[in-house]
Structure formats: C-alpha cells, structure tokens
Amino acid sequence: MYTFPRPGTHVAAHVMAFYNEPQWCVVGDTFVVGCKWADSIVYGPESFKDNPDTYNPKYNTKYGMYSPHCGLEKLLISWSHDEYLYQFLKHNNAKIPEKGLLMIRYHSFYPWHAGGDYRHLTNEKDEETLKWVLEFNKYDLYTKSEHVPDIKALWPYYENLIEKYIPCGICEF
Image 1 (cartoon, helix red, strand yellow):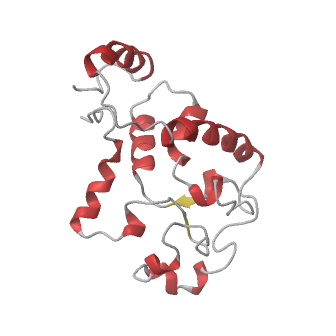
Image 2 (cartoon, rainbow, N blue to C red):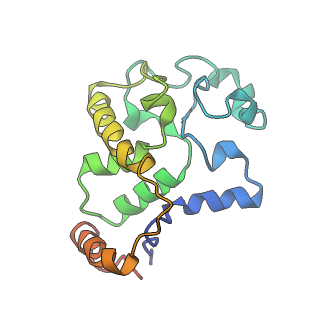
C-alpha cells in the first residue's frame, strides 16, 4: 500500500542525492530529456558531463526525438520530487483537478516557465498550464518563513483538504 508523505516531505526524491546520484537525476530544475539541454537549466551543461545523453547526437538537436509543438504530455521530463508527488496522486486517484496536478508536476520546470525554453515543443493547452504554474509558484517559492507555524492550530485546515482531495485509505499519519 502507498502511504502519503507527511506535509512538506514530497521532497523525498532529494534523498537520492545522499546516495551519490548526480544532480541531473534527482534535484534542481526539471528538464526535458531526449533533446538538447536548455541553456537556462540550473548549473548548466557542466552538470550533465556524466549524463550519457550528452554524447548521443540523436538527443543533441533542438527537437531531438520530438516533433514541433507536440505538447508537454508527449515530453519525457527528468525525474523529480514534483513528478514523484504527481504520479503518487494520479496513481491513487486524488480528486485534485487536472490543472492542480499539472501545477505540482511542472512547478520546478524552470527552464520552461522561467527561462522561456522548450516553447518550440509546447502547444496551446500548455499555455494555459503555464498560467497556472506561474500562479502556483508565487505561493510555493516565495512564502517561506523562518517562523515555525503552529502545527496543531493548522492541522484541522489541512486535514479537511486531505479529506476533500485525497481518497480515504491512501493516507497514513
């Protein structure tokens, strides 16, 4: 049985970095695989020197294995904590609307939504997704505080959200 990560721990994928997995496969920006690396990827090309795709000419062109404007749904995106939570929620039939799931899935896809890269691969639906991802990121990135919140006081609010959007039986607290 799958268990829902405790609040704030969807970053479980970051743990892989402690086991000597390279940066390009566990943390940082998410990015498209199967085509040329975007210039705006955090740490840039130097972080991909050990990635075998770097040396495969098939994947080092603007479109690589994709066709123009094929859409985000057709792209293979690097593994990340975003993808982990997205897949977990989809697999467990969470009741979060599609645009909410896509905000989770693409919120660290900075080369696309902040760097302007990969636009040659996106389609009209992705333009709508982009609006929602940008709105979500206002609350994801810029709401950190040094003040530790009162978990007991907040718990009822978050418990109601969990009950509403995540089916009973997949959460273990």
